[in-house]
Length: 146
Image 1 (cartoon, helix red, strand yellow):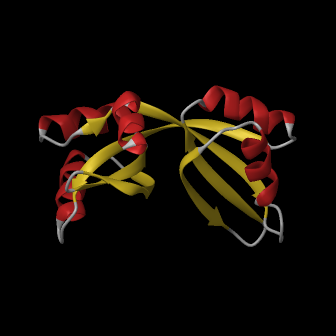
Image 2: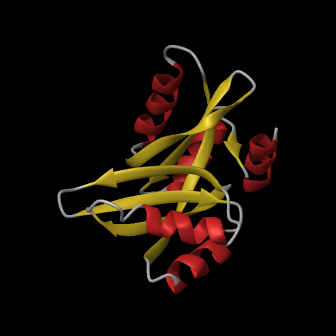
C-alpha cells in the first residue's frame, strides 16, 4: 500500500535540476510523477519511479544526495469537494499530512494524489475503513501504462 519515493536534495541554482534528470534518462528510468519544492538555499525533487532501487543507485552514483521515504497514493473524486472529503477523514483521525502532490493522469473519474503522512499505516487503515481506495504500486503502474 505504501510507495517508495525518492527525495533528491539540490542546490537552488540554475541548472541543478537537469543533473539528476539526465542521469535517470541515461539509465532509461521514466519518471511517473514528481514534485519540486524550494527554499532560498536548496530544493527537494521528489520522484516516484517504477524501479526506485535502481533510480536511487543511479542518482547516488551521479553524486546526488538521495533519501527514500514512504508515501501513499489514493484515488480522490475528481470534482469540487473530492479532496475536502478525504481531508476530513484524515483530520478526524488526527493524522498529519506533511505534504502532497498529484499524478498527471486520472483513474477513471478519479484523481490520483500522493500523500506523505506522519503515520502512514494509521492513515491507510483510516482511509480504507472509509472506503477510500489506497493504490498499491502494481495498480498505480497499470494506470500509468493506460
